[in-house]
Length: 201
Image (cartoon, helix red, strand yellow):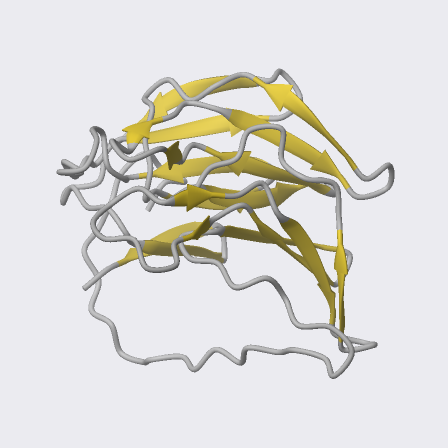
């Protein structure tokens, strides 16, 4: 729980099934380790990796951004990230999608890079970077503040971290928050009733 700067351990009592949608006219670009966020009932898929036949970590990081409209059941291509990367996370705040962290290249060095996407102008702009560069992290938003949670703090070996940092879009600044009790990467998170829940295997 982040609202009061502390975390509590919870039990998972349900498993949710995620529906992956595609339209007959256009199929989204296959990617792994991408980010996603929604604005005005449109879901944006951000960056990721496309690794056909390669082995180990690294691969072909991409800057691809695509949007899914559930009303028309259709995909559209949007302006690309300025910094291609995979293992990033993305969250929306006040109508803007933020692409946070990630990595690129064979050695998978963590990045602090943050970019903001404005759907109204279809443009990306750089923002203040993470205090702790990370990839395979997760993020969620509460009261317009974005929380970047956990992740891997080094390259291919991906040392898990419990670091939590919050981003205020108004001041374009990051603040260190209470760390998770259990360091982890590759986790998922979501916000419910002002609390953030971090889940992993």
